[in-house]
Image (cartoon, rainbow, N blue to C red; front, side, top):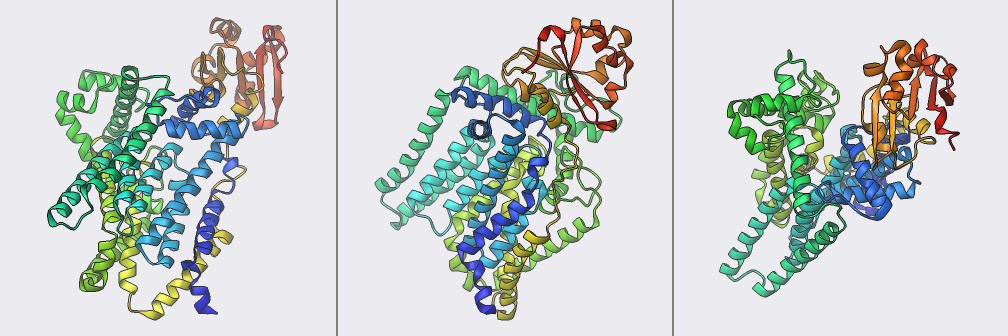
Length: 563
């Protein structure tokens, strides 16, 4: 019986449902999460193009926005349903690809354990911006296509997939496409010289046909874009320069704790002072101030070990955060796990070398997959150090590569030890079952959901398409992004701009053209706001809660009765 149980991880009908069940268990309660902020709210706006007219903005990950637009259609354009739905779909697709890749690079029990490792990391399935996990799917697909000594057609489709991904998902992967194309060309040339490769005509067809399909798809997407050619290029460049501004601002704020600016809101002023342009390109920044950019790169190198720890273990041993949101810093267990992983990789490398006669055929058969993972790792490291920030969200492909290397090292160490192999096989059955039963919940129903609550309570009264001017408790463009994706809308922070207005509050609201006001309990305690409805110009359209959870939506009387 134990032998039969130990063979379960080798069965696809057990392994894939087990990994997906673990991922589903980790995602349980995702519908209770707050709406995503920042870039995700911006992508919701671009997804409105697909939802309304099957159009995209080719400069902003159009395949991702099409997926998000489809989720909007499936959920009746309800952001609180569409956002968790598409997050769960991406996470489940990613864990399935990770498992498929690991099953080809390592023994099945180890593959299932690694897939569970991936599935339980909140830094993966609860990534700040869902588009980053989505951008890892083409990378995993390329590595998977290149497993098991692929022939010309699979190599061609792998190259086509990474090219399409560079155009339609994540532009930085163009560097990976270039490395893969160069390696495939070199291999073809060496095979032709040796007389062992496929015929040139067959190789050309197997390469050019998939590339033509990828380019045709990219062209079709471009034709559905609201911006084309020069305007698309300008939009893409604006996106890139904004990224340079924001990552540099965050880097600078960590290096200069005394700087009182906001890394996002004040980055243009900072860049203007240091580089002479509020939004420089990376080349502009290096040309204008190489010393400052050298310090930027050095700090990213300093953050890199912590970024890798956070990506693999969801914690950092140091006290500097490599991510944007708060991270688990100064964790001793992160140090212990890092030392254990490095020891495993070192011992596995030694064992592979000693046992190279056994492993030579296997590694030769998987050489293209390992090359793809190495190219992904090299480009990822270059980008996060020189152009961005070593955030786990930018390193999902590298994370999968490290996990695959750990699985291979473990396989090398346990080979030839039947008792250990049997124990590992049984553990591979027990681990997913234990996780499905006992994994602590990540999402909780009692967690605060301020943005989702604002959205749900304002949505019945705000017409999609605007125009609208919203007053909300705190600053942020997200309420407008979700409620009026495309249209004239702006939000005003009550606490930052209106709390001191006093008796003049009504005049300020009229002067600003406010159409909707969302008040929380703290705002409702303000006598000036409480007096608005008594003045006859505003009415309470909806209210609820009690105590610290009180809320109300106020609209001008001229707005009529909302439906």
